[in-house]
Image 1: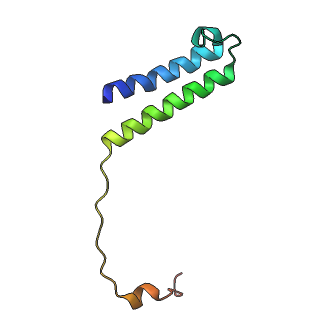
Image 2: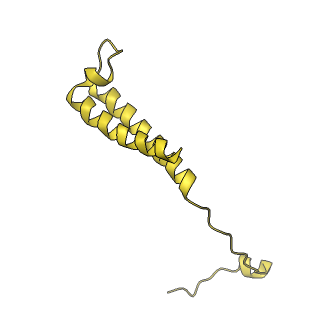
Image 3: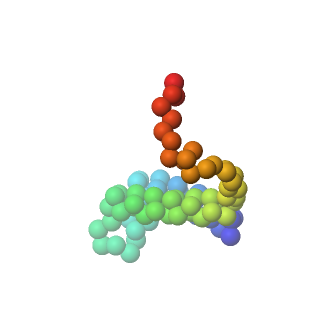
Amino acid sequence: MLLFLKICAVASVVILIVGLIKPKWVLFFMKYPDRLTVTSLAMVLFMASWTGIAKLTLKPKERVAEHRSSEDVNQLKLDRQ
């Protein structure tokens, strides 16, 4: 799955470059292809693939339990510098 997402990320860059030069090659099914549609398609594919890569590879941080009393939580710290 991770390999597939990396291939999608690379393919989105290739789609962007080719689509900016010849939009008809990427959007062959449209009657009037334009560069804005190609750019949008490439950006969505790129963002989706990197979101998937991050979801699969990054581990969530462990929560550090802080024991503070309710009075400490409610106090304003005005002596910061």
